[in-house]
Amino acid sequence: MRRKIYFFLEQLEINRSERITVSILMIFLIITGGIYYHHEPVVNYDPGHYENLERIFREKSRIREQERQSVLARYQPQNEIVIIKNRSDLIEVKTIQNENTNRPDAETDQKIDPEIININTASEEELVTLPGIGPAYAKRIVEWRIENGSFTEKEQLLEIRGIGERRLEQIKPFIEL
Image (cartoon, rainbow, N blue to C red; front, side, top):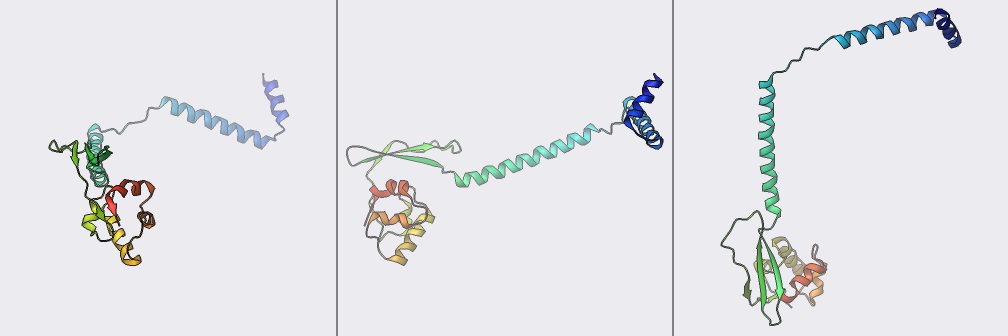
């Protein structure tokens, strides 16, 4: 056996000092592995401390979720309005409640005769009553009117930032020039 080890080391072509270094490293590796294998580390575990940390984490998570819900509530509409045209010139308005609203008094399936709004003379408050037009769009429409004069055709609303084909089709039945 010694002879096989000797010939193996001879094939590696390492000198005596290198063999000593490799041997010392191997012995060190074996000793540290044995110590690590037989030694159990002391656990500094205090369940009370971790329960306190977990309670703080849950509280902060709850506060973050409340903040997130309040921010989302500002950007989600309270009610979704679906407009259905009938054969007569009446328009049926269905108000669908969002999951976040708990208003049982909301009226649904009511028929109204829509008010036609002249976009050349309407104020911001009147423009806000159009479907899909909020305060920001109403302000942009009034500003466009001030800068460019009266609208000559309904399609000029497309020049206002944020108003696209879909929104224009949505408000066309309610506007006049």
